[in-house]
Amino acid sequence: MKNIFLLASWTLVLFGCGEKIDEFSSGEFDWAARKTEIPSLDSNKIAGSTYLAVYSEIYERNQHRTYNLTATISIRNISPSESFYLTGTKYYNTQGEHVHTYFDFPVELMPMETIEIIINQDDAHGGTGGNFVIDWISPRADFEPICESVMISASGQQGISFTSRGIRID
Image 1 (cartoon, one colour):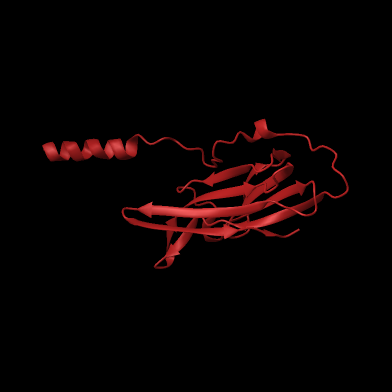
Image 2 (cartoon, helix red, strand yellow):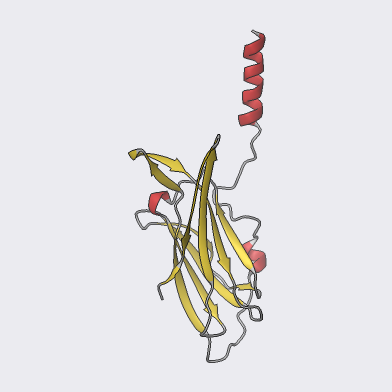
């Protein structure tokens, strides 16, 4: 009886005290607080969109069994001296259906700054073929943001991790 009580107590500790996480968490970012106006930029500015593959789950053993992953979406300003502006991020699932918009207004990325969006391991909305489209404006035609995703999961002593790099589509 004592062992059953200990087992039940540990089960409550391990599974019952978890922090409730917003369904579409985005790290520590308060996007509304980051909203800005885009200053008038000279004629060298460029606007573009970057496609980024993001796997919130992958197949395991066969097509009927999947394994959930935590994904970190990283958007990096590679300029040491100039800001650029994100104008929106949209998340799509395997079927190409819009899942979530993290923001659809200008957000400034300072020189060498990185922002991140986190897809929680329990969030499988994107599926095995999820992706982001990241819209941006650069003050110069000779650089654009680096957009990457890192997917990871671990269980016991086993772990899996891999990355994906964005490609410009517009």
